[in-house]
Length: 98
Ligand SMILES: [Zn+2]
Image (tube, rainbow, N blue to C red; front, side, top):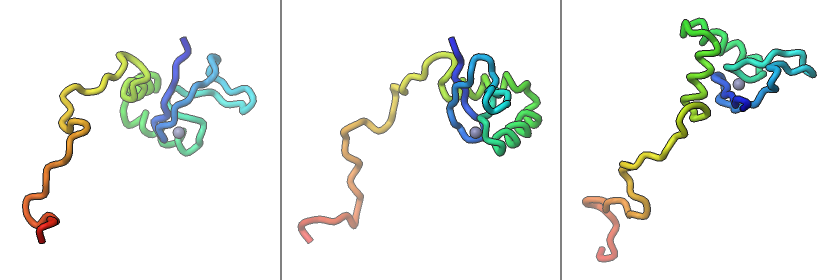
């Protein structure tokens, strides 16, 4: 199965060729950033700062956005119940009686 990647620089989701090279661009695909040069520079710095190998950082990013690992499920104990009106304003709320 081909991996879908997420750019750590701009959060773009991309699907590089299986060869991990873009022959027409003469570029190597990265597991951590898209082809935008500013992303490449920012992510190179992030890799150095994190002290993690680039592949590991890419994996963590994919996991964080739900592209890898267990599928993300909606939270069950969500506070705001759907379809319920927000609590009325205590005082000073507009009323028809005024
Ligand atoms: Zn990017």
